Length: 247
Image (cartoon, rainbow, N blue to C red; front, side, top):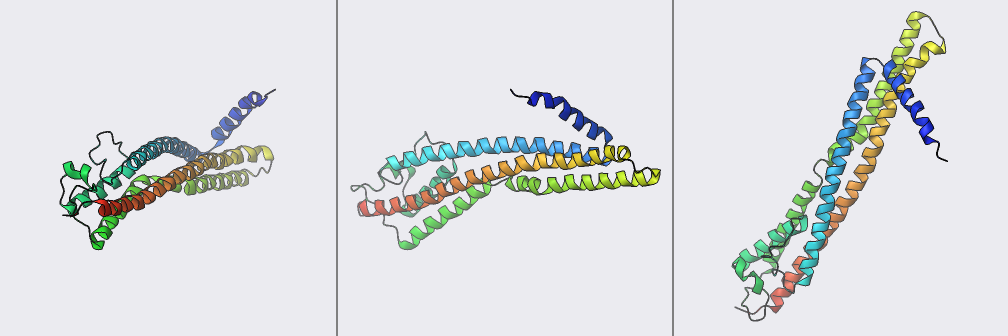
């Protein structure tokens, strides 16, 4: 039998009692931490959903790219989903078209044996690779946008809660010293209110740390996708150079 429901009134009354016995500084810290907690949960949900969509769209695009024989075969595909990988592909494909002096309409035939193709030099291939690497870096910056704020919440919230606790305990002891009453009944209310800030701080920091690690794992996976796609795209461009007809 689950007896957890029996503890809920006790927990609720304990938190309420501790908050009621807190001073203005302690209550401010608790309210601030609760606001940060709501912000953290909203950010984790929104960022996690965005990364999930980016991952699925990237997997879909990579699958479509691998189905095609030539590197530029899907440049005009209207069914592309916006994703980090598709943006990288767009930058690389545009550079290939520029160096080969081709129109987007001619991209479908690029790499075909019967289609005259300007051969790219090693310097031009290196330039294409550099452009793609630069776009990979830009995409990583976009994916990591806001993550630093979450890391800050992980680091700061426990210390903010600790500050509230130390300040509250100090205030409680000062009050006892001024009243000259060393009884536990005089000390307990102030200490309970002080410890509440540490509890709330940990309640914010722990989910923030878990969410931060989960988001970083997803970003790392997308980074691997982008790095692998970069090498795959360059390799397919080189193969198209070998297959294409000569001018």
